Length: 160
Image 1 (cartoon, rainbow, N blue to C red):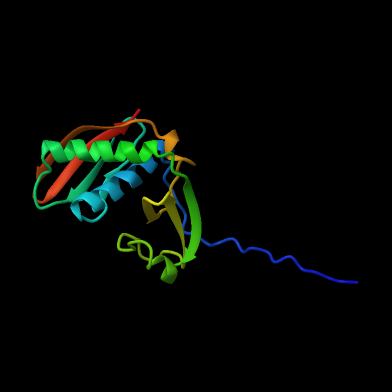
Image 2: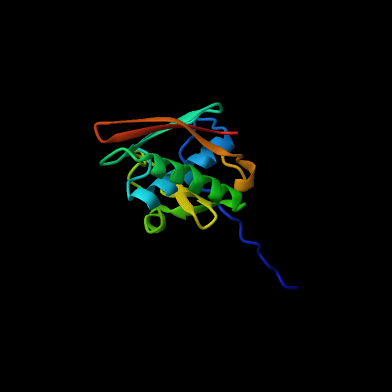
């Protein structure tokens, strides 16, 4: 008689998450953040308010983006959405995650296991929120308005 054991996968212990994001808008935020990092070399948004109807993000920039740059941001985000990228989740120990994502925004006392959300090959971020399964579920990204002051560019946007 041969006995075999099936290893059981331990459930990762994560910090509680008290937000209920609208998945298309929240996933679009990931793409917007990656776009800003790629185009401007700035950090991901330091302040974001993500809602179903419209959202806003603040970026640390030396100057306000030009009209051409704003059009490029919108076009780039929509191009990524149109690629129909898979949105996947993996759980990693914090030390391994640190080699993949910026951990500077994590709250104190965060768990040793992190949930990493990937938007295809475009973005990876530690995140506990709700996301779509594919970027094709997001819709069209539109910048509604923006303003600049004190090194902060605030952009208001939506997906439809």
